[in-house]
Figure 1 (cartoon, rainbow over the protein chains, first blue to last red):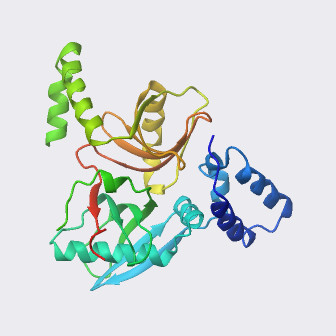
Figure 2 (figure 1 turned 135 degrees about the vertical axis):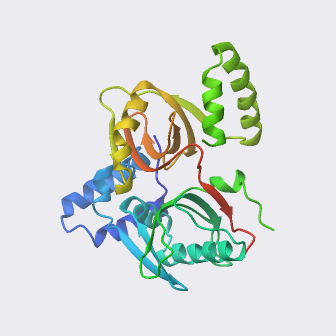
Length: 160
Length: 125
């Protein structure tokens, strides 16, 4: 049993107001969110239908990165007030870090901990690099998840 | 074959008592390093619901279901999000899970020898 915070519920309902026309459905979802099992409700697939997936495209030299923000991630971002621009900014910092440290980005999972801007809150991005190609014109695709700061305490790479 | 697979193959040939000797020492080290992290064993019944939240993960649903129904070790990442890492023999799964509702949403997975590379950008602003 886990309760959602008021600010989280407010953000989610504001977004859902633009997605759900059926007022009975909206009230039913609000009741679930405000209930004793609000946090558990957000993990289930039914609610995700109202959070459309997004693709962020960003160019890095000759490479196009396609960041797939799946419905589950979209929900978590709205819940916490994390904007798509913040994810894009942090990913750009990740690319910059890899370039500066000669790290080659391969297919696989990464956990990235950092702030998209100086005064912004920290975000933990868990990403799956699904496809990487060295040929320009073929996009690199990445699935984005939002973690919860775990990497800060379990870091394996120390950066100077 | 890489280091993790080789070690697992070797350990699997040891007796149960020898495996306990190794596990106990690794476990102590992990507990010291990851203070406050919750590890638990999970085992689900026939009512288990497993879905993939990323299309790339759909091909792993059957083996994840089998693993969860036979019982396995899980490490809690976030209590409020219900996110766990679940450790199978040949694959680790990152999921959002409600044990009481027998529900698991699969987000990501990887081979044990290729765990997520962790990058800390906190000092680079």
